[in-house]
Length: 285
Image (cartoon, rainbow, N blue to C red; front, side):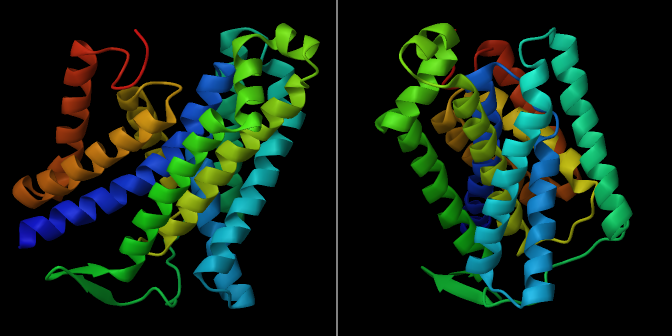
């Protein structure tokens, strides 16, 4: 029974991994751009949740919506002020610009919030729930279910909607999209907004269960790259599968071997899989 609880908990956590990783794969799929600041977007979502609870007394719905809106706006602003000026430049300029953005966001958070670890005050998601004879934190169950729902919704938006068709048209051929009346800058700004918004919601969900500091963005950024590479760059559905797999592997390896070994197992299996299938689970060869 304990092992089943560990497995379910790992899958729920993996769903949140998938949500913030889907934003990273969206940027890559739409623009062939690697965003090294993506982990910092997750971190900022956690602090938005904290501010909403502490200053406004808001609950999970309020801080989740606030994180989505705030990070969506930040993503659009980052595109308008920085990314659109370097996106068609050399790859080195793209890498250095997003890496510099990551450092700016991280150390601004250090300046505002200090390096101390903080945690979210008790919310309505406190406590545990019994599901089939196993006990899970309510926050973890809600976070996992919301993350799966939003990740699938993002996939459907890209594959089953007119807006998704416009985004994909810009990704395929910017010039041809312009000839069809699509404004590429607007679509790419929306892409950055959706990516950052997904990261912000994931950060707010993670804040309900874990303490954090401004440096946590580095950890989540690396995890997002692993998840996206495992699932296949450009595939939101691949990120969902990869996130669930990574969450499951982390949970089982921590249970059997100890928490200090879980990262070794995850990254070891990740390297082995990419050696066999470099394009990832859902990526194109």
